[in-house]
Image 1 (cartoon, rainbow, N blue to C red):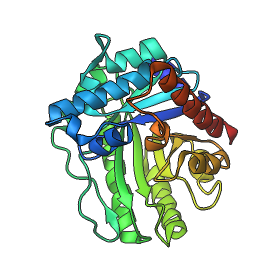
Image 2 (cartoon, one colour):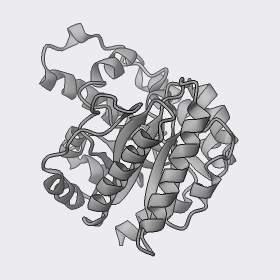
Image 3 (cartoon, rainbow, N blue to C red):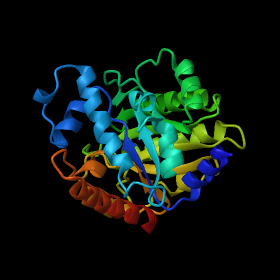
Image 4 (cartoon, rainbow, N blue to C red):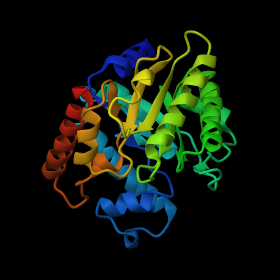
Amino acid sequence: MASAQQTEQVKNGKGFIAALDQSGGSTPKALRLYGIEESAYSNDTEMFDLIHGMRARIIKSPAFTGDKVVGAILFEQTMDRTIDGIPTATYLWENRKVVPFLKIDKGLEAEVDGCQLMKPMPGLDALLDRAAKAGIFGTKERSVVSAANRKGIASIVAQQFEIGKQVLSHGLMPILEPEVTISISDKAEAEAILQEEILKQLEALPEGTQIMLKLSLPTVDNFYAPLVDHPKVLKVVALSGGYSRDAANAILARNRGIIASFSRALTEGLSAQQSDAEFDAALGQAISSIHAASIAG
């Protein structure tokens, strides 16, 4: 059964999760970093064609396999598209042995109490049904903490778990992502409140239920050990959060049991102008360095 194999790979696989889920708002920046300016496309259709081309190039690279990349998070349009005529999620698992996840959030609300909740997700049940039929293993949903405000953080964590339970009801594995902004002055205090609120919600989950967490790299090494070791947490993964790849890798390597789920730090140095050999070499170097940091702890 694929899901049992996929669960084992996420839990014990020696690698990291690639975040290939840039959506509408972040796509122009992702393309610009890839060497494609906004003058190269005139509408959203052309823009999304170009970003899918970039993602397909990454996924098809010889460096991108389940040996070092245990999973990949996709944007909805990526799930709905194909690679070499094969649905993307199917291609990932059957051709690359990489577990497919889907980004499901629709962006962020305005900041309240130092935090940004997720916007409403109309049609989420229908999307989750479609994802399950497409071979998606799990989901990812992001909100943001920008201050050590207990009221705001409690609201974010409650919302994350509410959506997580909805995902679980469709037989999918939720990655809850309450991101703490790395530049705030009270980051360590925010992380302490965040962990307390997550532990409260975990205790309320039924026995045998598991979720995943995607968290900012902590201020104090191994601070999230109670979450890493919690029986209701399948895996804790880390976002790069604005750190360079080298900086993110250095911090990650000091944190036991946490693997990477990097986006910009993964694609750093890749360019549409590179030859396939140059592209594969650059991607291979990035994957090897993130993989090494992920298995070091």
